[in-house]
Length: 298
Image 1: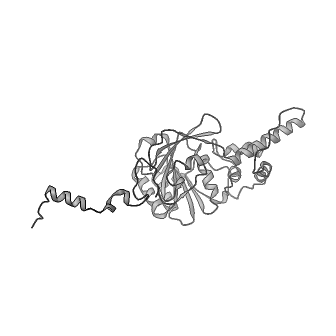
Image 2: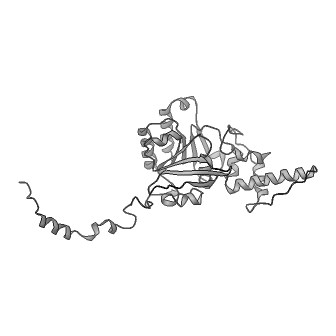
Image 3: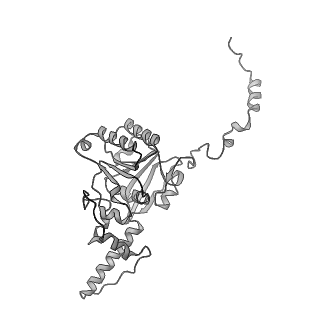
């Protein structure tokens, strides 16, 4: 027999009798996420290496077990400058590069404390022409326990393929960064975090726009130094040595003051002694993100 309908008076009595713990405010701090504030219970995160960026990201860093989408006008220009501080801070685990546009510049990576022997590049004719093969390679890399992060360049990828990658990153608790072209910002994406990279006004600046995060929109873009402090010290030491050589040739030029620690001379010496691992290319392609360090090796 159907249950009798409740009268308005009965409904009001039930609402008053509902325990206060059912209110969202009583569920505990962080149990309810409000869209006007940054999410707090987002799982594991890793510091990005950029204090200004950490301050505006849920959890204060790159999410682990989630898809992070990086959009930019041209691949190979800003993604390494953005990601290298976090990748270099982790000393264990392989870094899998799926279909990278350029071969990494090994001395530049060494200057940022990133061991080039950790890099595992997956590329070839099949990956270059087949989008499904690139997605499959990403999924297999995410399944590997010895992987620290997966970086994938996917110029063509469907939303359902991105959802598969998001689920794989979540299931295996891996860090996944997918680089895509600028027009992709008009497409739907399951990524928990989407960023747009653009060159800054100066040579040492990188503009970062947060297109999507678990929190309120960020209308003001972030301006990050394109060259980390260690690399800036290295280049300053190189300019200082060049100035001293010119002074020895009778050309009077002002000497640049030595940078703050770490000692630039020690950094330069370490770079000069760097040996390229067997099988690795000694230089990157045009526009490689870490070719900024090339003048210091001369």
